[in-house]
Image 1 (tube, rainbow, N blue to C red):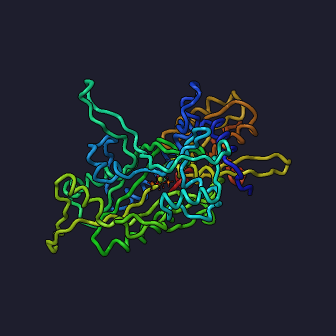
Image 2: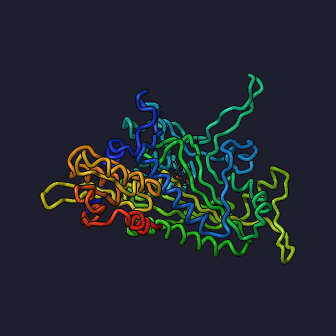
Image 3: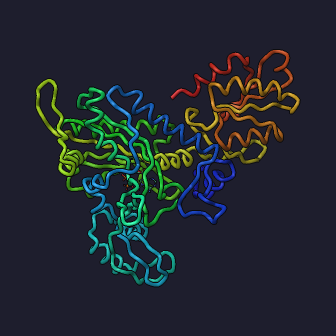
Length: 457
Ligand code: ATP
């Protein structure tokens, strides 16, 4: 099995196979935005669906929410984002490019130094002492570090002079916190319970890049567990495990995943760790799990003036619940799925086959219907219209059957169904397995049940 050595192959494959295109391409692009094509939108939707199934549908004590992207600005004062959601930036005086000081140190030390544990002064001293130069022009002539707020600002109001500054949300979590009481009351929820959300977030990243690893617009899948102080450690450990198992169940290879504890904790946090993935660019964050104490609800109580207390129905005890947060980027997980599934195999005839070994549950198309010849298309379309009631199916009648198989391998379709002349006689088809390339004969009437069984998650 060939380990993917660089991202370029994935980026090219994604573009050529309708998975992901550069954003606004015909206008020269819009840096670090990406559009999901017909194949990619299925993949990402399936990933989000698998996450929702695992963390909402299968959990009797988790409630879903879909909160507004635009929120009252006071939310971001309470959350601390207006004051301190920033990265340490330095500008190169020579070529005027902007860089993150922490990233410069990580890259220069090949990950041996931990800039998260350094103050801005310590980072400046390191950069000077080690002659860390601009990756763009090679000069070592930096401005001092300044904190750069990552929130995108916009304004609300219909007339000039009557506008209010508002922000595109930089995370989905606050939509869960501000609805804590609404959900608790309307759903008669008893602590401990969870609130989950999948939605867009926006960050004016200083150094976005590496395809969909770090973009300025992305989707997050977040789960906040509300619990009583004292139970938080238990839930922190539980969600670490649940998050890890979810990735294994999606088919991500265990050797490409690891936990990494945070070296520097926010003043309110009791514990925090990431699950990292071994990307072609090296080990880096895939998701975070944070034990956040009762900071979030306390801050909203303070800034909104509304009590965030929960009354235990059995003991009448009143308290502000603690929060254990689990947060994962849907796009970053899509990148992980793409990297982990990618494989180049040498076939017996010496040719190379590129194949995406997606878990069948998240594969963009579950089955491709391929008539062996064009004059079999009527029967093939019949099979397509019956299977497409249950599954996302592809239909392809152009080119040699070998080429059509290769194309389906590249987009990770787990099953190809070939319609031949025997099909007209006995209503059977050939089903070909993506991973083994083995083929067998199956009755059309059994196809749907067969596929349903294989794509369970
Ligand atoms: P990073 O250190 O990579 O910038 P973070 O620690 O700021 O991430 P969180 O705020 O904890 O990230 O966000 C939770 C998750 O959202 C991350 O683990 C990642 O999967 C995803 N995410 C965060 N920022 C981006 C981004 N700019 N582009 C894509 N996904 C992102």
